[in-house]
Amino acid sequence: NETGVYQAVQYLIGLGHRRIAFLMGFETVSTQIDRFNGWKRALLEANLPAGDELIIRADPRFYGVVPSLSETVVQPASHDHAMPSAYEALQELLCSPDRPTAIFAATNQLTSGTLYAFNECGLRCPEDISLIGFDDHDWAPLFSPPLTVVSQPTYRLGQVAARFLMQLINGEQVEPPSSLPVQLIIRGSCAAPAGSGGVRSNSRVD
Image (cartoon, rainbow, N blue to C red; front, side, top):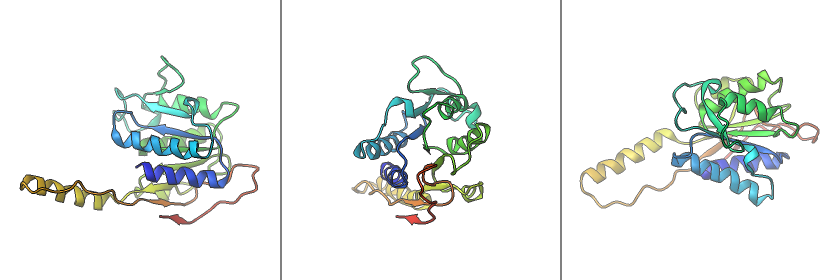
């Protein structure tokens, strides 16, 4: 989780992005914490901003109740008491004078909803703003543009977890399973920031 997001943010930095926002699921889930840490580590190493104004956190009391971003309640990190929907919080961020030029969305709901928010705000992806999501679901290449994603080997993860569990049930002494590699699958949702003179990239990063 952390390594995959770290690689993705490094890729965006390499394209020339300097303001990269992070949309995360609720913070009680370890995978979300790991993904957040990967985002922050990549930005801090590059001496780029990683403050609360670039973070939108899902509220754990409501997250996952409904699949669409526009109905999922989140709390922007910079607002102590405000609890707008994730869509409203994202709209506010996208309409700000110094809006980010790229976004990493840490869940599938946030990824699909972010594209909807782009459309509502009149932003083109990737011409005006770039987007990377997490997990390479079957629908990721079907969006317009096809989504750049961090892909994890979910089938292999299931195999490793099942084998580890069976060994524990059988009373065997086993080491915890090691981390499995992820891939950054680059499609059409990322480009250099507008006006930078860069080009869109289509390749795969292991």
